[in-house]
Image (cartoon, rainbow, N blue to C red; front, side, top):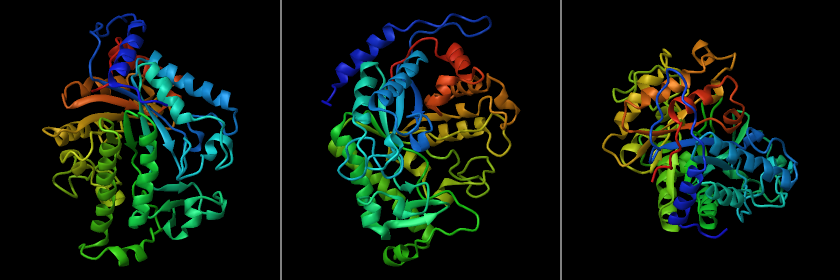
Length: 411
């Protein structure tokens, strides 16, 4: 698809906003405000395990396209302005990549051409609707199983078995190998070369979440490349730092103006571990467990935006949404990194969740609280399936209370 100019995209956005009806006022709720400018209203569209799209593998190209368009149209109707589309869920591709095979989540068979170009279509159709399209990549996950022989014969992991580490029931690329970092960086940047995506987006998976009783076996890589570091943890953090810095530099080189954002797990470190940390008691800390120094990336402007996944309710004892919101606002204060907040729409109305999530107003309260922090420039909702189905009306309440008027994406 040809490059879409920023002016043309803005014109399309404004035209789309002009055709969208305002929500009617509800008794006791806020009065409509003028259209907001520069507010992130995003949704994650997940493809791993066919979570949100396509609904199942093996649909025809026309059926897949129709489902994708329906998600974009739903985003417009919900007055969102950004779709974060997962295009590399498991070391595979939703575009014709020269590096990696077509995703089996499309056809049911890894490497089989689906008969169309999902990423190219998503960019074009999103921009036509005034939506931004952020291309979402998972850098190191290769498979949701541990058998390399189940990968297609031409898969890079089959050709380079030394790149793999089985852990936690998955196959993962080893971040400690320079050749792995170079490969995954170039595989992801291929999409940036081909398409005018508005941003590159990483989720929270760097080194894997810890699994009790298991060890991530990177001994050989540490022996070869860990000299000069005080311990393995510092070496691992440097490996992740390198991927972030090198990806950012590649984006700037290939397509200036395309942004780079990361959505980490919401707790960097607990204050009991580090006085700079948050007033939380989370069992996972990204700095220590995923070896991702998310605070540093934000404060030192390595990335354009950070979108921590604050997937807890207000008042949750171990990780209070309100306390984490305030902590992240302080982290980005004075930096050039924009703060968006990841919201757990998927928990709303889930009977397995605690009582606050049974209240349709919980998420709306999150947005009301965020307005007290000028550093918060918007929210992203997980995920597209729940935006469409809206199990208990939590998304409808957000729209009625906060999104009665459209907003253009942040510039």
